[in-house]
Image 1: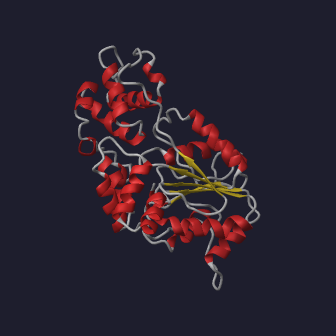
Image 2: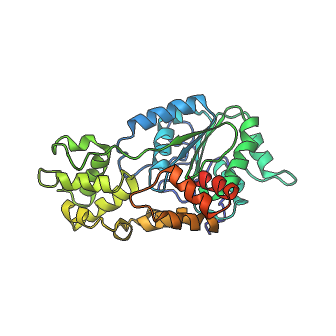
Length: 340
């Protein structure tokens, strides 16, 4: 049952559902952690990793934000893997995506940390007592659908646990005092109107990701003089979004780069993956969009439907003007800016 946290083994921290279970830090001399071993390469993001590491050295609550498929979780895991040696009492990943009940957020964190609920004691108090003297990095992954519960937990723990740091990933900021927001940018893109030579195209992160993922399903795939323009168009049409590029590259098993580019007129319908290790919400581009759409309340959904009249995107000012004309100024401005 996805909404029922599983207790960790005694004196260890379990990570239910990970590809690789890594409780307690099994490597000799390595601090305890439950970071999953990745099965694919981490492409690019050197600047972002360095910046997030710097921010985390200075701040205690850092939220990686961005649209679905922008690589927030992968970036968080890459940073955590680099910093794991710096947290003597552990680096712990807490996956919130499977949860639908906000009351289970503290329970899930407790399960990962191996904290047992004591009779007559609030679970948050038990977590606070466990963490108050420990040097720990807590990664709260996919907070957006449980943003209030995630924010409440951070507020309950951080002021009382001086050596605790929280790295959150969310499509929406937690919106609490002390939070630093880092917006995850798209991968670097080639200009499809002036694509570089085939041997220099992989210097762009989006093209390199497409090439590496295409080779995973078609080992003889290469960027050549003939397909350079098509690869550049694929990356540009998909806005440098890692998930979309990976879904497109998966089609290289049966389609050429030129055929993939030609089918991106309807990327939402075309891009679907069959990786059974990927969460259902990320197996198709439509599923990723629906995950975000379902987080909106009804007035916000109406507003975004009306925003579809803009061809080729819109400015914040134009969106705010439509919002004012559609709903009351107070209601719409606050909710839209929060979603934006």
